[in-house]
Length: 395
Image (cartoon, rainbow, N blue to C red; front, side, top):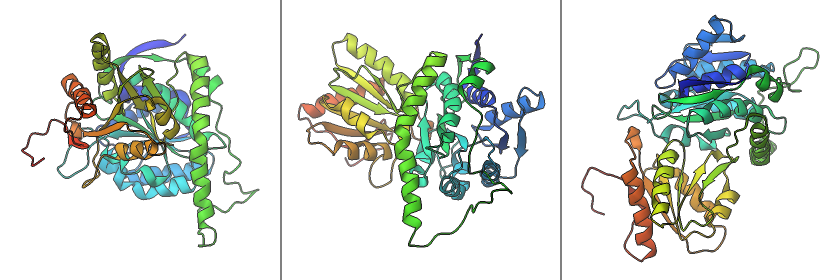
């Protein structure tokens, strides 16, 4: 039987990785991710996990080690955060271009300067174009389940693309919740051992890590693009299969909450979705038709789902824990691009919030819905607004 434990998001990821049985774990500590690799080290030490644990000298080395082991057909895992993610960013492109199905957990944390150990999405969203699948989770249970699903997605022979599993730093990585831990035999039956026809083999030599010419580079990049685009259906199938086996499903690329008749919809990533749900329940009791669209995958981007779910709304707000300086939030840019594909008059507002780990309380979520209402009533509203800003502005 499955069991329930009161654990943090970091612990939940470690439990999910243990159940997936990676052959190689490459570890380098960085707050707030360190607990994940500490727990995995303990599991290897007490032999509850049979894996090679490599304590390397940097994040760059960690991902390099994962590429090397992945080239041999090994299931691999590593974890990082913030400046560590940027330090290994060179390897992100090597890993995706080499089609190594690595799973990497990233504890979302703000980027320096100013120096901060607290969470926002500026680290991972800055790497959207590196060719990795990107997942954002809401709570500890989803963290564990998606750690398992990530290996199934990455290793699917039609995908063979690395996966970045993102957890909000501290808000999720260090918050304790009751989490159901599946039985090992159930996971073994659901997640098959990793098999690839492209592993290094002395009997069947292959050319790996090669150079290309202008005459053929585009075709390699096109194959990467198609693999991630085609992963949309595979992600949905894996989520459905996981739900049939373990009783939990997450909607695939997105999770819509009370959006069917919603006039006002908030679009968000990660743990803030929980606060949004609470406020939406309160607003519904007041007769206001509010809804939430949680984006779970930023790559591949769920453009069709966003278009369909928001089609009947009067206004949407995108909460970005990120800012592309001098323009707008990255999530808003992607959402706005998707919605531009069909003619409508929906009001679209962008709220920059939670930078450097600043709390986004219920009152702020209510304020967002109020501003959406103001906007459709022709009151003056700003398209891009920093929420709860503590300085005077000229706006």
